[in-house]
Length: 148
Image (tube, rainbow, N blue to C red; front, side, top):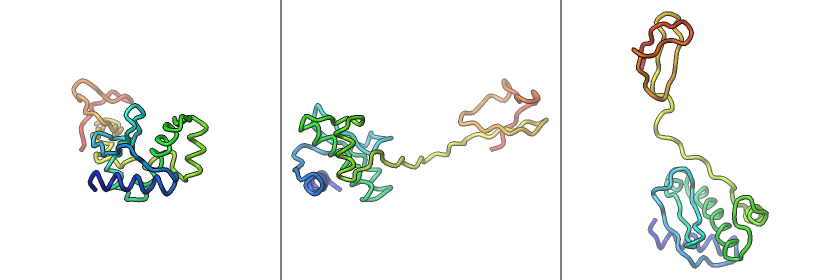
């Protein structure tokens, strides 16, 4: 999806759900990692995360666009456009916009290192590697060996 197609999509959603045109700029931001999109009030610009379109599809992506358009239209009207404001919560419910987006699936595994005590067979799972010559078992003070 290029920039003009993205702007047309956002404008169509804005006209459908808000009965107002979207006249400012919208773009994909590849640096967004944990959020589906953001509205920048000082620039009147919406930035979207393209990964949500590829991972979850168009329905989730349209929900993110509706959420950001709630920020946009309330900001232009001079009403409360932040997440905690009553106007924002009301417009979210009126348009059927999601309050939060689903988290992206992580590519790397949470568990990277597994250690076992040679005496009591206690298993320790760690994200970070530990120095087995420096650390020992917390139960019996036995020697740790790396399993994975």
